[in-house]
Image (cartoon, rainbow, N blue to C red; front, side):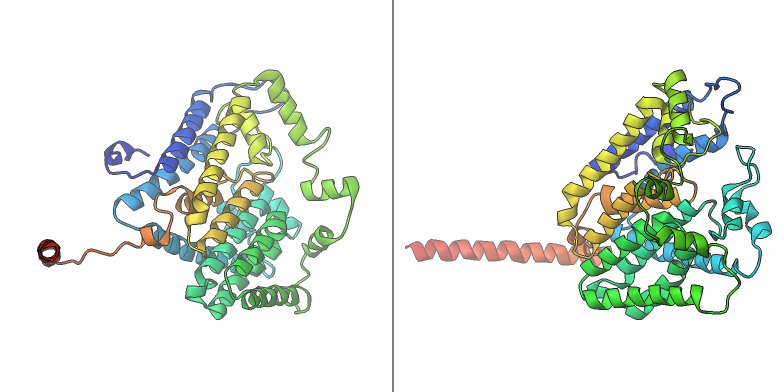
Length: 420
């Protein structure tokens, strides 16, 4: 961000990209300026101000970073391909780390990623999740891991499942560690949102039976590995079975929201506290030392009703950009963009998806490349490259223009004589 004044003249923003960047900059500025508000003693402790400021600045950095990449000559599709490749590899490696956690206690090695100093008096979310058998790898909480695995699976289908690049074997190899990691994390985001979206995306790519068979085979392989192969007793199996069993009424709501909603829940208590004390602008970037179980409770606490309105406006601008640009995108890119947008918006109900450290950065990069950047069609993005020998190219272009003008003059002469 410190280099922004020096890069401003070279940055390239589409109108939509500029709108979202400006709106988020206003939101971040509001939260930073308002960060000195202290909660009433005895009810809640103040949150981590430094971490809060970081969480609201790096989305802005991601938006500017994509603009920098485009300004130095990279095309949108090339950037999207590279980001997808890197992300699939990294998340696949994390799935392998999670699988290895079934055999070796990773707490000491992964503690640097999970954090040492939680804001509350309880232990970290990652440690509690590991004790319950929810293996997340480097991610600090299962919901964050679920978003990452979902994005990686969607990216793998985009890379290796589209008609012009049909690689079912590579798709299977790339998807297997991602699926294993997603199952071991027992993330509702992955199992209930990401996985169905991946199947839908595969069906929309063409050669539907082949795609679904590959994904179905990978899911079956994961099922065999986690239930039939002689592995250590996986403590998370009971939670996975509980998640897929049928329940109804209040039990259904409690199971899939983990008690976050309802009277007396942490959400309702914190929400009411902010409305009673700082309803309009909240407590700033530091917030309160409570679990932010969704983007909406986070925005209520840090930005009040004004912050919630700004965040909702950002989402509306992104969704409107998708609605306007989606019909003009290529056939294999449309389902990818749609799935990423649905996943990102749905994830806000269970995690601060747009500000969550690590995975939030990739959400912003994917949405910027798929929705916000200018040049929405393949034809516009894949412009012919100028030859390295610019002098030869210029000479050839001038020759072409002279020939064109000569032909036009000849046509006019023929037309005049023909009229006589």
